[in-house]
Each structure stands twice: as structure tokens, then as C-alpha cells.
Amino acid sequence: MSWSPNQPDSVDALFERRKAPVLALADDARTVAEACHGMARRFHRGGKLVVFGNGGPSTDAQHVAVEFVHPVIVGKRALPALSLTADVATVTGVANRAGLEDVFAHQLRIIGDPADIALGISTDGDCANVRRALETARDLGMLTVALTGGDGGAIARTPGLDHVLIARSTDPRVVKEVHVTTYHVLWELVHVFFEQPGVLTPEVAS
Ligand SMILES: O=C(CO)[C@@H](O)[C@H](O)[C@H](O)[C@H](O)COP(=O)(O)O
Image (cartoon, rainbow, N blue to C red):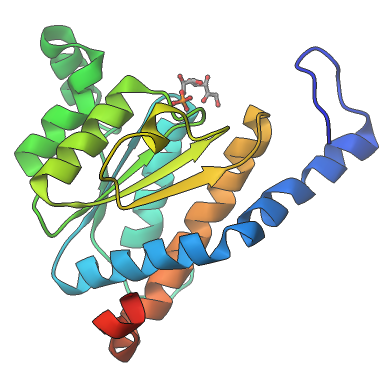
């Protein structure tokens, strides 16, 4: 569906647009499943999930973290996760001295462990601080997962990242909706793999 920033949707178009996230996600099902498989393996090794992003994605980061720590479905196992966006003292303190580009990377250098998972969220894939944090996580040996949009931006072109999930739309509204759907699927599928250790063999991973 074509989209122009200055042309309001009709009511029909607005509801039609809601189908796009699910369709986009279905196209990328294997990529998403591979990321979840890798994440489940890290949780089994005692790793934690560390999530970050700016603006809207900063609250997505908090949302992802709480899904893992306090699952919406009662009885689901909690898994360790935190967001790097929730502590305004840390974010502003690092930004003030080291610059905004280092706010997430700095925190990862302090709290990151090689067993951990870094999940960076950026609507256009070009956020410098998300990219720098993913590079830092990669260099620490963490599993790196990026959630981006458009053509994936600079983050998709960053060498050595493990899983780059791209919401393939130029419409930022669609990208954001794909992201919300994707991280709920991530949470569910990680549990599927985590709870069936037999599925976590290297043969299946390859
Ligand atoms: O996310 C929202 C609103 O939902 C924006 O206002 C947001 O603050 C900005 O686009 C941020 O710069 C996010 O950048 P990006 O990495 O997600 O492209």
C-alpha cells in the first residue's frame, strides 16, 4: 500500500494498514525463529537479555524486558532481562560526559557478559548509539539481535551481527507495529525453545 506522510489515511486504509505487520513478519518467520533459537541457548547458558533504543523504541525496550521478567501469561517462566533506557540518571550522566552515542555501549561495557543477549531496536536502522552498542556487544561476545526497519539502515550493514530482523516498510508506523508484534513473538518462541532443551542441539541450530 502506498503511503505519503502528509496524506491522512481513510478509515478503511487505516485498518488495512494493520494487516501489514503480520504479513511482513510471516515473510521473515525463519529469520525470527533462528534468532529465538540463539536467544534460548544463551538463556540456558545463564545469560540475560539487555535491550535498548531511543524515543518510542526506548519504551519498547522496557516493554520487552518486562515481558521476560514478568510474563503476561501467568505461569510462564520468568527469564532475566533489563532495559538500558529506564535509568534517567545513568542515561543523562553518560550522555553528558561521553555523548549520546555512548549511552548504551558504556552500560554494556560495565554490565555485559559474553553469555548475554543484546537486542537493539531502531525504526530506521540508523541510530548511532544503538549501532555502537551492538558493535560493543558483538566485541564482548554477546549474541547480537537487531530490530530495524526500512532497508535495515547502517545497523543492517554492520559486520558480524548475529541476527538482523528488518520490518520491511518505509512507513515508520508500520515498522513500529511490526516491532511490537515481533518482540511478542520473540518472547513466545524463546520460551518454546527454552522449555524443550532437546531442540537446542547444534544440529538443529545449523
Ligand atoms: O519513536 C518515536 C515516536 O514513536 C520518535 O519520536 C523517536 O523518538 C525518534 O524517531 C527516535 O529518534 C527513534 O529513532 P529510531 O532509531 O527508532 O529511528
